[in-house]
Amino acid sequence: MQGLDHIAVAVPDMEQAIANWQKLTGAAVTHREYVATQHTHVTFLQIGDFRIELLAGDGPDSNVAKFIEKRGPGLHHIAIRSEDGQKSLSELAQAGARLINESLRPGAERTLVGFAHPSSFGGVLVEIVEHPKHG
Image 1 (spheres, rainbow, N blue to C red):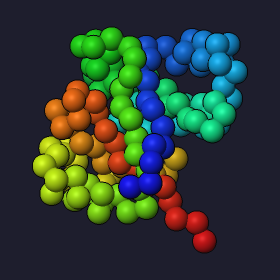
Image 2 (image 1 turned 30 degrees about the vertical axis):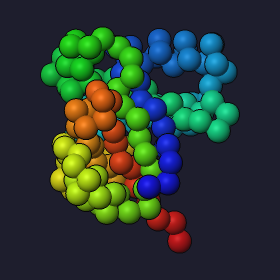
Image 3 (image 1 turned 90 degrees about the vertical axis):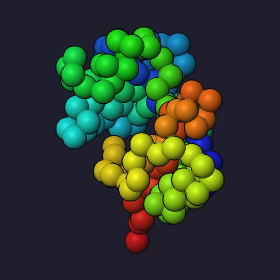
Image 4 (image 1 turned 180 degrees about the vertical axis):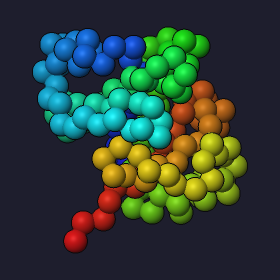
């Protein structure tokens, strides 16, 4: 694993959240996408060398909307970058982590992602993210 990739924040209103983050931090929007398989609108913000991912569900049945209903808006997950996401998921499982995804699935920005259950990380959902190889 290579280090922190981003922190994701669940928001009820994407446009309001973008405006607020930009006003308060000067963040720049670097990427917007709709991930249909997750029914989630995604916006990445750049603040210096750091990225924030804003997540908004597209309806009350989306996972993000259910998350907000249960826990309120706020920290959704932290993402750890990996050159080999599948290997990192396997290493987490071997070390005793409970996985939500046994194998990687498509994520935003053409990444492959997999999640470890919050019970393994003191209540924090952890995403392993593998960016596409260039070249």
